[in-house]
Each structure stands twice: as C-alpha cells, then as structure tokens.
Image 1 (cartoon, rainbow, N blue to C red):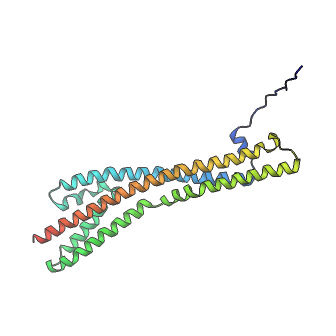
Image 2 (image 1 turned 90 degrees about the vertical axis):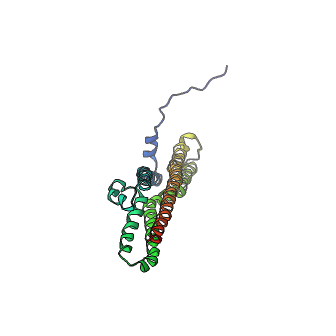
Image 3 (image 1 turned 120 degrees about the vertical axis):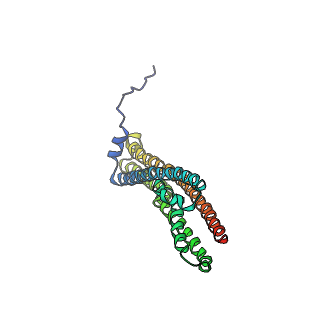
Length: 231
C-alpha cells in the first residue's frame, strides 16, 4: 500500500510581510528604489501638465498671431499664454524690436543681429526650463535596474549563507531570501521602465516645442527684415 504524504496547509506570507522581514540592506535598496519611483512619477505628471499646456497655448498663440494685423497686437495678450515658450520668444523679441525702432535706420540693420541673438537666447532658456529635472528620469532608468540587482545579489548571498550555516537547502531555509531578491529585481524594473518611457516621450515633446520656437523666430525675423526694407 502506498502512503501519500500528508499536505499541511500553511498560511503564505504576504508581500508586505516579506519586505518587513527582509534585512536592512534589502530594505534600504527597496526604499531607495521606491523614493526614485515616486520622484519620477512627480516629475512625469508635472512635465506632462506643463508640456500639454505649452502645446495648447502655443497653437492658440500662433493662430492669433498670424491673424493679427499688427505685431504689437499680441503683446497685450501675453498673459493668456504664460505657459507657451513660443510666446516668450515673441515677448523678448518684441521688447528688443521696440528698442531697435528707436535707433536710426543705419543702426537698425546692425541691430537685427541683436534681435536674432535675443530670440536664440530665449529659445535656449526655454528649452533648459522644460528640460529641468528630466535628467532624473534618465538617471533612474539607467541605475534602478542595477540597484535592484544589488538587492538581488545580496538576497541570494544571504540564502547561501543560511545553506552553509544549516547544511540544508530546503525551501523553508532559502525561500524568504530568494523572495527578497526577486522583489528587489521587480521593484528595480518597475522604477526603471516608466522612467525610460517617460524620458523619451518628454524629450520628444520638448524637441517639438523647440522646433516651434525656431520656426517662429525665423518667421518673425523675416517679418522684421521686410518691414525694415520697406522703410
């Protein structure tokens, strides 16, 4: 007669219980990864809102600008477009143009280079502002898997230490440390993957806004040159 082993139902520890039972090194790794993930999501939500507002306001600004009969018409409406980087280019360019209009026509020709530099500097400043904190996403995307891997290696080392100390390789002996190792790997990937996706998406949106600013600056400068030629 074959005797079947008696299966005893045991309560499995939950995820939080496993984390709280981990040693200080693994807990430290998980805390760092959690902090990085939270920081990334704060940046992602902030940049998404900012870039979405920048796109909507830039589209509306350009629509109104090209339908305005005079350059100065939009200057008095800039408060409506404070999230648009292209509107900031126009604002600084118009202020510089106003200074140049006070000069003689001979000096104005030389002053066009000042106008171009003003717009180019504004474009650079606006891009730097949009890119602020975005590098943290790239840092998280590139380092979080390795931080998680460190926790994984540490958990496996702990498992081998217990095997050496007890002489047993049962699941009861090494199971918790292996679980801690796998949790560290999973959390590292969970922090890195959204960060990489968001970094690429945000960079793409920033480049779109930069192209809008460059195109507007070129068109604005051409308008000024034509107006100057007509004097």
